[in-house]
Every structure is written in C-alpha cells, then in structure tokens.
Image (cartoon, rainbow, N blue to C red; front, side, top):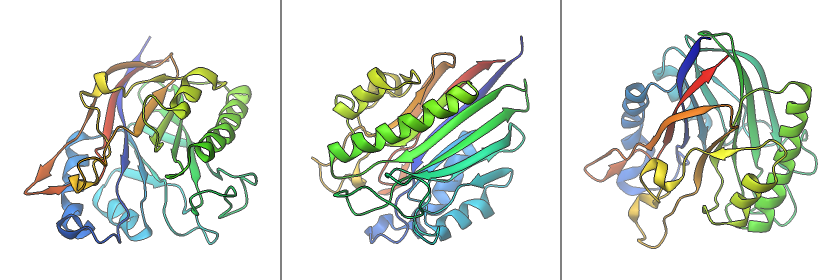
Length: 265
C-alpha cells in the first residue's frame, strides 16, 4: 500500500492594507515567500488574502495553483484561498460557500455578526503519489461573538456532512477560528461535528500556546486561535508553527501552522 507524506498549512496572512508600522505588507511579503518556499507545503490555506496579496502569492509561488474567491457581494475582498502544489495534488473539486442562512448568496452574512461576510473555501484533491483523495475546508470565523461563531460552525458542519454522505474521504478543517482551545466553539467541533475530527495543532503538538500575537503590540492580546483538524484516518507525524521574525518584522500577526501528514490509499 503506497503512502503519501505531505505537509498542510494554515496561515492568516494579515489584511494587506493595515497600517502596521514596520510590519506593513510590503515589509513582510518577501519573508512570506521565503518562508513558504522553505517549508514547501503541499497545501496551504490562507485567510485575509486581499486580491493584490493573492496576486503577489501567485506570481511568486511557481508550481502552486491558488483557488478560491473573495467574500464580498462582487466576489472581491478578502479571500480564503488555498494554494496547492501541482506536482503533489490535482484539483478535482472546488466550492466556496458563505457561512450564513443563504450560503450561495454572495456577500451574505448572519444577523448581529461582526459586520463581515464569512466564507469557507473547499477543495477536493487527488494525490499524484498514490491516487488517494482528500478534502480540505478552509475558513475564518467571526472575530467578535462566540454565539455567531457557533452558528457559523453549525452551517459548516452541515456542509461537511453533506459532502461526506455523498463521498466519504479523509478530510481537513483548517483556518482562523477566533476561538481558544478551551472555548465552546472548539468543544463543539471535537464533540458534536457529524464528521469526526481530531486536533493536529494543540499547544503541546506545535510547542506553543500562541498562534495570534498581534505583532506583540499588546502583551495581553495574544492566544491560540488557528487550527488544523483532520479525520482520524490521517496520521500526523508532526506539527509546528513558523515563528520567523527579522528585526521586529514578522510573517504576519499570526504564526502559520504546518502539519506533516501520512496518508495511505
């Protein structure tokens, strides 16, 4: 039985127009490319990728296919795009849906949320190593309200169950969930999701209880809110963060998380 070892990552790349002093996008972008090129993830899901940031990634990550769409009504704006190494996986399915009561209405959102549309980018991939298939859900939840995040997770759970009922396969859920590990939201994922998931990115596994740090501008405003979940049929060999920094400039206000996975067909 042939095994495919590959790396999957999640990376909130930070809103590219933010006034972040020395950590503005133009000061970070070359570090970001070097970091990804060094880690060579086979799959990496981004959050907060504005169109010009995505364009830069596409131009500077040869060999990768970036897929997904913006979250706004005109399909522009922030993007939860997924980059796929084309020598490792073939794209065979793609969908974006909104975490709202009208998931296929562009730009739709739940009432009383943080005021921003929230989406999930979903890909189905075929391994070029062993022909096995996997599914990846990449999302970014409400940043203000726990009850809204729970509603968004229930919508996401419904989609994952629909996909799984049509064709079950190893599955990942990755992204910035704006929820700490002991939160009700993370408990809901681990306890109540119809597609059973395990956390591959616990603080013990990645060696840190911080993935969001806000460039350390506020010592109290940091925590673990980024995740890689997977179905139990996927074996995690190791997981880790990339905490690269140079002269006070970070990759983002979040650390990317990576997991090395072994999949048997």
